[in-house]
Structure formats: C-alpha cells, structure tokens
Length: 214
Ligand SMILES: N[C@@H](CCC(=O)N[C@@H](CS)C(=O)NCC(=O)O)C(=O)O
Image (cartoon, rainbow, N blue to C red):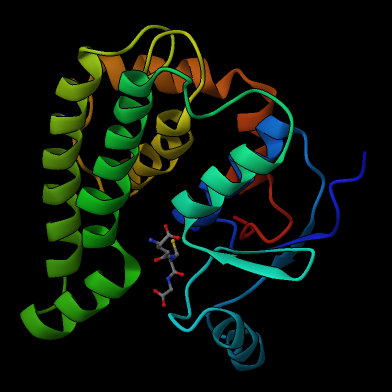
C-alpha cells in the first residue's frame, strides 16, 4: 500500500527534524527530503509560507502541512504501519510523553539557536554558550533521574517509544555545548542501545546529504 506523497523540510543538525527522521525511519516510510539553509532567503520564504513560525521540521503529507515535531511524530505513529511509538497502556503512554516533553519543552527551546543568539546580544559574547552548558547539564540531570525509574534497554522498558525519538539530539547538543554528562549513565546506555538500531543510524545528522563537510 502506498503511503502517499511525503515531503520533509529538514536541516541535518536540527534537533526537531532529527526526531521526525527517526520516526519515519522506524516506520520504514520513504519521503522526499528537502534540506533548507537558514541563510537562503528564498528557502526561508517557502518555509514561512508553510509554517508561520518559520521553524523546521515541516512534513507535507498528500498536501497536508504538519508542523511541531512531537505532533508530527504522533501523526506518523497513527497513520503509518510499523512499530508503535506510543505504548498502548495509558500510564506508559503518559511516561513516554512526559519524557518527550521534558526534553522538547523544558530543555531544547531554552538552548536553541534563537535563545542563544538573543542571549549573546543581551548579555554579551560567550554567555549563550555558558547558558547552554548549564541548562543542558541541569535538564539532563533531571532526565537521568526520571529515566532511571522507567528504563530497560530503552527509555521505557525494552520497546522504542516517543521518548527515545527525542533522546539522541539532546545528548548530541549537550556534548556540542560542553555540558558534563559523563555521570548520566542510564542516558548514555540508552543512547548506545538506540545507536545500534538501523533507523537511528539512518536518521543521524552526519548521514544526511546536507550535513556540513568537516
Ligand atoms: N517545538 C518545535 C521547535 C522547532 C524548532 O525550533 N526548530 C528549530 C530547529 S531545531 C528551528 O527551526 N529554528 C529556526 C530558527 O531558530 O529561526 C518542534 O518541536 O518542531
């Protein structure tokens, strides 16, 4: 059965786009990848015409425009066949969403490009990076304590869920901003287990055609 036409507006190292790439790869859904560059005015005008917040990712499915990575991942989970990312049992489903929201609402926006740029402007050079390292350490310490209660091989038991879809990018960002995450052994173990899965490998920023060459 055809999944219809899917176009993903993505940036290789966007955390939010990374989440959607993982979900699509887990479901084995093929899509057209439209890599955009923040500095390309024409591309950004197209992004703005689809998403008034000017943010990535955007998934267009049979002409329907979807925005907001978590809302997109839930849509993907509902619409396409393949392993379920939201557990069937309501309490586990709540846990998956709670972890995903901790990452995507409590941590990610506060260390994002926009936040850091404004902070540098207001507080001075280097303050954005200093803030990101502090915030990522603190937020991930909280996450380590949350996940220590739920984890098996992955964030919640031994099945990959929405929580795991959000994990790789925030750990990647933590390393990028030199946050000390060495003591967060549960998170690091889950990250290793996820990295061994082909879907997670395929979705990695460095594997995308628009990844910056080193
Ligand atoms: N809550 C949104 C966040 C999306 C978001 O902020 N994406 C970033 C890239 S990770 C972006 O497009 N930033 C554009 C900008 O900062 O101008 C989601 O999960 O999709």
